[in-house]
Image 1 (cartoon, rainbow, N blue to C red):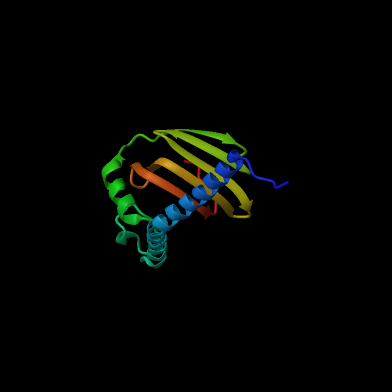
Image 2 (tube, rainbow, N blue to C red):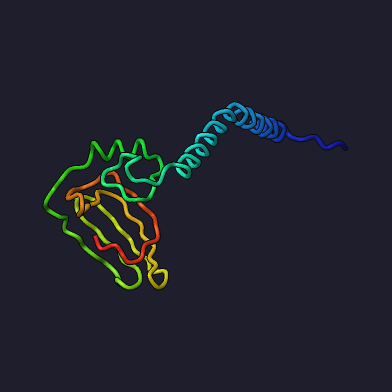
Length: 153
């Protein structure tokens, strides 16, 4: 007695092999686009790494000595979306200021500080940052860095 597979089993194996082949064709079609995205990402990373460290070269508002990734569009946006203001934001601090601290302000701004050791804090911030030296709000801002003391504004 020979074993024959049912028509349903034959149909599902044909669909599975067709689906796999279809996926392979899609991947092959998308390969040039994926390669282009990879090349652009590498180029941006190298350009950010090799860009000059002087603050005036990138054109961001009141930029410090650290370099900006994607400086051209970010600095352009900062020049058009930032504004001067004498009034500082109201700032709410949540958590233990000696370990982990979350700060919130309006216009929307978030800062998180993590204690890493003596004179080492990990800081993440995003949003409309009030710059006391520039006396105004700078947007867009995002930063992730090590600092010597927690950021309180």
